Length: 301
Length: 278
Image 1 (cartoon, rainbow over the protein chains, first blue to last red):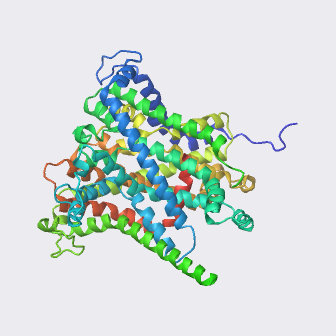
Image 2: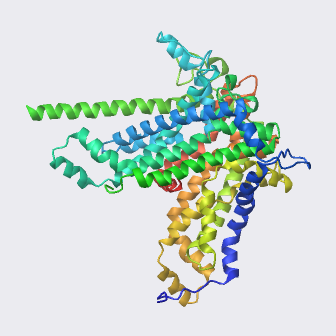
Image 3: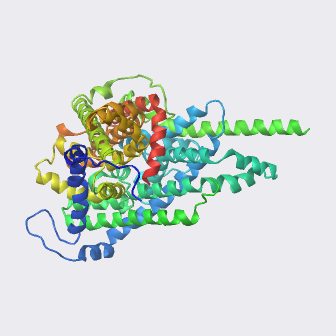
């Protein structure tokens, strides 16, 4: 009836020594802050001693504010394109680099490398490359007789430029995830498909794509969550503290939280914005958990 | 005939592949080459077109212009990254041991708390974190960065997953021989987990070396800035010193680049592990 092995219970002092360093730290700097962020979002706290509960007013203000809605739109646009391009390029690179050939490991390393570098350093180089007046890219376009662009300085092109840089830096990460996924597809499935007379195209759609579905789902979720948190590139490339790009074209959600919280000290309001970000991330995670069960083809793995 | 056709097809396939890969690699490497070459160019030649990869008159002038501030920024980055990574490994491995090899009440509920905090974006807790740091009189100190960076629920989770694969019978045998939990932790668990710890160390190193958001919030004094924060000052100055900017960017990517080239395997494993995080 009872468990066969009697599990001895560790004495509390021993548990405390092992557990407390991380538990205390996480409690003070993660668990308490997340509860306070929720609490603070219902107040008009601005750092001083006098503040009061104002219910969901911050949320109503945010959702009715042009700046906030604009930043949501900018973030969603950024997320859509960045995720789509990162996954497409990552998948393409993974498919090319999955077969064995000379130089494969070198190419894999090159594709992944930008991912490990500081996004501030990367941003500085791209500010040079994309300089609208004298930058090498515009010079190259002129030399080829093509139209130039204002890139980061243009209202219509600033966000696309940031998306480009982000994709440049990150698609290698998804390539590595996809390469891992490709390893899990059993070779016998391809052999079986060959015996049944399937060509390369048919094999791709009937074996590779379904076999990759778990990792694709996971990659998409990670990519979306990260895209919603974009900040460094935006801050560095389009104007720093007072930035947000030409006409707020790159004013993403986190930039708004930063500006309202630390620029204007509207802590309560910025907390509400940060809780909206948290809710978005939460919803995406839940969608992944439930969607995975419905859509992902695990039979084939 | 068919074999000839097949051969031709495989040739075309191979060469298209190489051309595509070569093209993508150029696009990926070009900005880095430009960064390094510009770092050694005098101001007047930076925007020359066609771009010269090898500067006409190489100079280290851009680096000497950094001498007043950047040695300090670099030292701050090195110091903070080392302290944070080490503290994080200590707290994470110890926590992982408590969650995998010790038996106590509430263990699973506390562990659930850890797991559920993994997905919280740092930006969602940054305002209360800032207020707590200010309350502790630690605003604009390195301690602020160390305290907020040293505790990782994800690191604990990752190492715990590995600890679980170590058979309990090893530990029971040691306990029968009279070893206490600390002996077991230091002499059995840690030596067995070198690979997972190395992966976590490399990932944390990269993260904190490159971290920009936290220093931006907690640090304002010039002398306390880290490399990414110091570099970002360039982007907001009215006149842009492109040469020194590229020199600084070059300095900041050297350590990560070296570690990446030396330990690619761990990076790849780290990515696969972070897949769990989703």
